[in-house]
Length: 214
Image 1: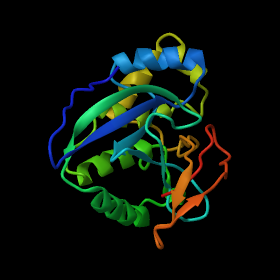
Image 2: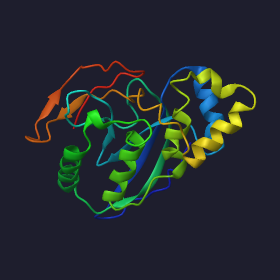
Image 3: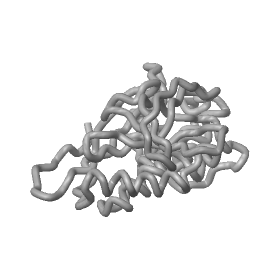
């Protein structure tokens, strides 16, 4: 499990990073556990603040890809661990205003496995909340994820393991793997223009279903 060390601080709100394996398959989770120990892996990430978890996923309608769900309950992915990142001084209303601004820039159609995924979003959200960056092994998703579209079977075969891990850590991954992993499914959505809650059950045609959005 991750670092859960935090305590109540008047006027401040804890910010936590929720980490998931992108697949629930037992073999994949075991493999991800091995890569996690080596400083990489293929993860979904979401940021919990003021009792709600926020993340980012793909869509095709040029609207925001930010979505939210109850903490540690992103459907379609397998929860792994919680990491305490720090404390934010932003109130709940201020955090929501921040997310509305981010929603204008984080469009679902811009999702990119290597350069614009849920881990990149989580990192920016944490920085904007004033708690600093997330652990580097989380954002190494892009490197390990480059092998997803070639089939995860290649990840566990002999000498290829070390090459993949090295590429993941170095961030040196072929551009031919551009997309294909959408992380999660949320329950409630918010229109970034009106700020109104919505419900949606739309599924993406990707490896993990994703319901959107903030």
